[in-house]
Length: 185
Ligand SMILES: [Zn+2]
Image (cartoon, rainbow, N blue to C red):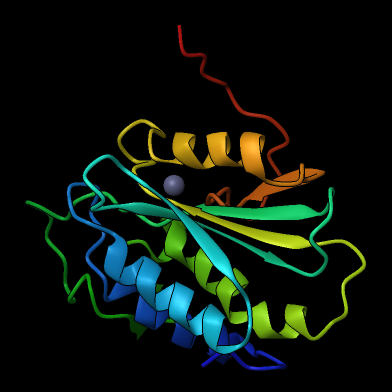
């Protein structure tokens, strides 16, 4: 499914796959992560996982291009908020196009970004990058950004330091250069 020259349709196809996984934060995200990992593996991109204590959820880290310091991280969370009690007019786990818009839980926040990054993996791999592009796909963002902490620890201890991170949260296509932070005390 990962094309050498991905089109918008290829990104939408990737999104259609990702929204099928019910990764509401209370659920495991491993089926989604395993799907992404195996698709990346099929085109020769290695990835590593950091798990929660119960091993029911994981973050995925993958590096495309040289294994050196620098490069840009494309970061997105894989979990979504619940649909409980909401009046959906189509199946939230099935991508549906209406009036030029794509509907399903997480299309915007934020499997759309993850799908676009993922769909371009093979193109990036073939581009002979001078600096790396990294994928950081996390869990448990919607419940307080707690899942990514294991990945950040792994990055600090075991991985070359990237130059910058692009977090693909929905901002109506406006660049948001900073965000309130959090500090563990
Ligand atoms: Zn989000």
